[in-house]
Length: 162
Image (cartoon, rainbow, N blue to C red; front, top):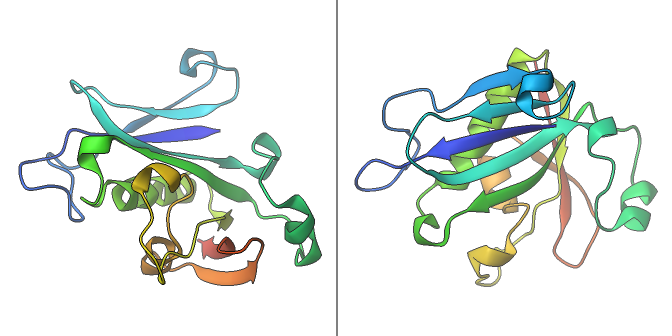
Protein backbone atom coordinates (compact mmCIF):
# COMPACT_ATOMS: atom_id res chain seq x y z
CA UNK A 1 0.00 0.00 0.00
CA UNK A 2 1.28 3.48 -0.72
CA UNK A 3 0.45 7.03 0.13
CA UNK A 4 1.20 10.01 -2.03
CA UNK A 5 1.16 13.19 0.02
CA UNK A 6 0.64 16.70 -1.34
CA UNK A 7 2.70 19.39 0.42
CA UNK A 8 1.63 22.96 1.08
CA UNK A 9 0.19 24.73 -1.93
CA UNK A 10 1.67 27.86 -3.48
CA UNK A 11 -0.32 31.08 -3.15
CA UNK A 12 -3.35 30.91 -5.44
CA UNK A 13 -3.87 27.14 -5.14
CA UNK A 14 -2.66 24.12 -7.04
CA UNK A 15 -4.33 24.02 -10.43
CA UNK A 16 -2.12 21.29 -11.77
CA UNK A 17 1.26 22.26 -10.37
CA UNK A 18 2.99 21.80 -7.03
CA UNK A 19 5.30 24.58 -5.91
CA UNK A 20 8.89 23.42 -6.15
CA UNK A 21 8.33 20.48 -8.49
CA UNK A 22 8.23 16.90 -7.25
CA UNK A 23 6.00 16.43 -4.24
CA UNK A 24 7.10 13.16 -2.73
CA UNK A 25 9.85 10.61 -2.40
CA UNK A 26 8.78 6.97 -2.12
CA UNK A 27 10.19 4.69 0.57
CA UNK A 28 10.04 0.91 0.79
CA UNK A 29 10.72 -1.74 3.39
CA UNK A 30 10.59 -1.69 7.17
CA UNK A 31 11.63 1.95 7.35
CA UNK A 32 8.40 2.89 5.57
CA UNK A 33 6.25 1.75 8.47
CA UNK A 34 5.32 -1.83 7.54
CA UNK A 35 7.54 -4.42 5.86
CA UNK A 36 7.04 -4.44 2.10
CA UNK A 37 4.78 -1.39 1.93
CA UNK A 38 5.33 1.84 0.06
CA UNK A 39 4.65 5.38 1.05
CA UNK A 40 5.65 8.82 -0.03
CA UNK A 41 7.23 11.27 2.37
CA UNK A 42 7.20 15.04 2.26
CA UNK A 43 9.83 17.24 3.82
CA UNK A 44 7.67 20.29 4.30
CA UNK A 45 5.81 21.87 7.20
CA UNK A 46 2.41 20.37 6.49
CA UNK A 47 0.46 18.12 4.18
CA UNK A 48 -2.75 19.38 2.57
CA UNK A 49 -3.92 16.04 1.16
CA UNK A 50 -3.09 12.49 0.18
CA UNK A 51 -4.07 9.57 -2.03
CA UNK A 52 -3.96 5.89 -1.00
CA UNK A 53 -3.00 3.28 -3.61
CA UNK A 54 -1.59 -0.21 -3.72
CA UNK A 55 -1.69 -3.66 -5.28
CA UNK A 56 -5.13 -5.26 -5.16
CA UNK A 57 -4.02 -7.96 -2.72
CA UNK A 58 -2.95 -5.25 -0.24
CA UNK A 59 -6.25 -3.35 -0.62
CA UNK A 60 -8.84 -6.14 -0.98
CA UNK A 61 -11.86 -4.44 0.62
CA UNK A 62 -14.14 -2.09 -1.29
CA UNK A 63 -17.77 -1.09 -0.83
CA UNK A 64 -20.50 -2.65 -2.97
CA UNK A 65 -18.74 -6.03 -3.30
CA UNK A 66 -21.79 -7.84 -4.72
CA UNK A 67 -22.34 -5.34 -7.53
CA UNK A 68 -18.59 -5.12 -8.12
CA UNK A 69 -18.22 -8.87 -8.61
CA UNK A 70 -21.18 -9.03 -11.01
CA UNK A 71 -19.32 -6.89 -13.56
CA UNK A 72 -15.86 -8.25 -12.78
CA UNK A 73 -13.79 -9.77 -15.58
CA UNK A 74 -10.46 -9.87 -13.75
CA UNK A 75 -8.94 -8.11 -10.75
CA UNK A 76 -6.80 -5.04 -11.45
CA UNK A 77 -3.09 -4.89 -10.65
CA UNK A 78 -3.58 -1.69 -8.62
CA UNK A 79 -6.32 0.09 -6.71
CA UNK A 80 -6.68 3.72 -5.75
CA UNK A 81 -8.97 3.56 -2.76
CA UNK A 82 -9.02 6.79 -0.80
CA UNK A 83 -8.29 10.53 -0.88
CA UNK A 84 -8.07 13.13 1.83
CA UNK A 85 -7.92 16.89 1.29
CA UNK A 86 -7.80 19.28 4.22
CA UNK A 87 -10.93 21.37 4.66
CA UNK A 88 -9.26 24.68 3.81
CA UNK A 89 -7.67 23.26 0.62
CA UNK A 90 -10.70 21.71 -1.09
CA UNK A 91 -11.68 22.79 -4.63
CA UNK A 92 -8.07 23.78 -5.40
CA UNK A 93 -7.03 20.69 -7.38
CA UNK A 94 -5.24 18.88 -4.53
CA UNK A 95 -6.94 15.50 -5.15
CA UNK A 96 -6.05 15.71 -8.85
CA UNK A 97 -2.41 16.37 -7.99
CA UNK A 98 -2.41 13.43 -5.57
CA UNK A 99 -3.98 11.21 -8.26
CA UNK A 100 -1.38 12.27 -10.85
CA UNK A 101 1.40 11.57 -8.36
CA UNK A 102 -0.07 8.18 -7.47
CA UNK A 103 -0.27 7.23 -11.15
CA UNK A 104 3.34 8.34 -11.68
CA UNK A 105 4.44 6.17 -8.76
CA UNK A 106 2.45 3.20 -10.11
CA UNK A 107 4.21 3.68 -13.47
CA UNK A 108 7.59 3.80 -11.70
CA UNK A 109 6.71 0.54 -9.90
CA UNK A 110 5.96 -1.27 -13.16
CA UNK A 111 2.50 -0.06 -14.17
CA UNK A 112 -0.43 -2.28 -15.02
CA UNK A 113 -4.19 -2.02 -14.76
CA UNK A 114 -5.47 0.54 -12.24
CA UNK A 115 -8.96 0.75 -10.84
CA UNK A 116 -10.86 3.09 -8.52
CA UNK A 117 -14.42 3.62 -7.32
CA UNK A 118 -15.35 7.32 -7.49
CA UNK A 119 -18.72 9.02 -7.25
CA UNK A 120 -20.56 10.66 -10.14
CA UNK A 121 -21.43 14.17 -8.95
CA UNK A 122 -22.43 15.61 -12.34
CA UNK A 123 -26.08 16.10 -11.38
CA UNK A 124 -25.67 17.55 -7.87
CA UNK A 125 -23.41 19.30 -5.39
CA UNK A 126 -21.69 17.13 -2.80
CA UNK A 127 -19.64 18.21 0.19
CA UNK A 128 -15.96 17.43 -0.38
CA UNK A 129 -15.86 15.80 3.05
CA UNK A 130 -17.94 12.92 1.63
CA UNK A 131 -15.89 12.27 -1.51
CA UNK A 132 -13.40 9.76 -0.10
CA UNK A 133 -12.90 8.16 -3.53
CA UNK A 134 -12.91 11.37 -5.56
CA UNK A 135 -15.19 12.11 -8.50
CA UNK A 136 -15.71 10.35 -11.80
CA UNK A 137 -14.95 13.63 -13.61
CA UNK A 138 -11.53 13.90 -11.93
CA UNK A 139 -10.62 10.35 -12.93
CA UNK A 140 -11.85 10.89 -16.50
CA UNK A 141 -9.59 13.96 -16.76
CA UNK A 142 -6.71 11.58 -15.93
CA UNK A 143 -7.58 9.11 -18.69
CA UNK A 144 -9.82 6.67 -16.80
CA UNK A 145 -12.96 5.21 -18.36
CA UNK A 146 -16.12 3.97 -16.67
CA UNK A 147 -16.43 0.20 -16.51
CA UNK A 148 -19.69 -0.46 -14.66
CA UNK A 149 -21.89 1.05 -11.99
CA UNK A 150 -21.70 -0.47 -8.50
CA UNK A 151 -23.86 1.92 -6.49
CA UNK A 152 -26.50 4.57 -7.03
CA UNK A 153 -23.79 7.07 -8.01
CA UNK A 154 -20.61 4.97 -7.63
CA UNK A 155 -18.67 3.67 -10.65
CA UNK A 156 -15.73 1.41 -11.34
CA UNK A 157 -13.22 3.36 -13.43
CA UNK A 158 -10.08 1.88 -14.93
CA UNK A 159 -6.97 2.74 -16.86
CA UNK A 160 -3.85 0.93 -18.07
CA UNK A 161 -0.53 2.44 -16.99
CA UNK A 162 2.46 1.41 -19.15
